[in-house]
Image 1 (cartoon, rainbow, N blue to C red):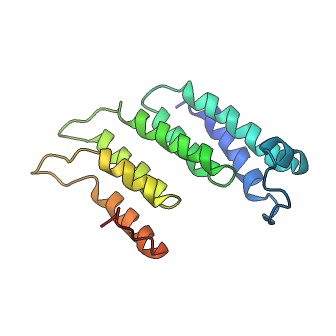
Image 2 (cartoon, rainbow, N blue to C red):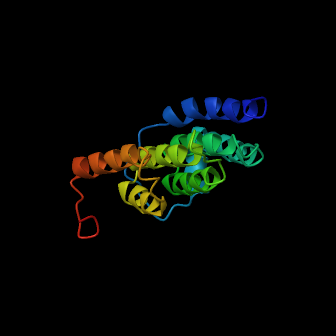
Amino acid sequence: MRHLAPAVLALTIAVPIAAQSAPERPPANTNQSKTEKDAKDPRQAKARELLESAGGQAAALPMDVQPLALLQLAVIETAVDKAKAAEDFDLAFAAAATLPSNPDRRYREDFQADIVRELAKFDPEHAMDMLRTMPPGPPDEPDSRITAVDAVLERALAEKRWTARWS
C-alpha cells in the first residue's frame, strides 16, 4: 500500500487540473502540436506533466498493485489525451494478465473485465477488441465477462454505432 501512495497523490493533483481546463474551442490551426497547445494553456501542460510522472511511478509499482494504478491513470488521462489513455488501458489490461487466478478467486478475469467496462465508456470498439481476447471461464462458474459485455453493448446502443463488425 505504501507503494501506491505516490501514484495516488500525483493522480489526485492531476484530476482537478485536467478537469478545470478551459472548455475546448475549435482550433484555428488543427496542425498544432501538443507543446504549442500546452504553451497556450499552462494548466494542460501541468496536467500532462503530472500524469507522465504518475505513469512512471505506476510502472515502478509491485505487479499486484500496478493494474489498478494504470487503470486509474487511464481513466484520468481520457480528460487530457485520448491516445495516451488508450495506451494506459492496454497497459493495465496486460498488467492484469499477471494477476493470479484460481477457483476460489479469479482476480485476473475479474480485473480484466473491470478494465474493459471502464474502457467501454470512452471507446466501445477498443473495449470489444479487448473483450475478445479474454478467455471464457469454467462452464460451472459465473463468467467474469458478463459485466464487460453489458457495458460495451450499453455504450454501443447509446451511440448507435452498430456496424457489420459488431453483428
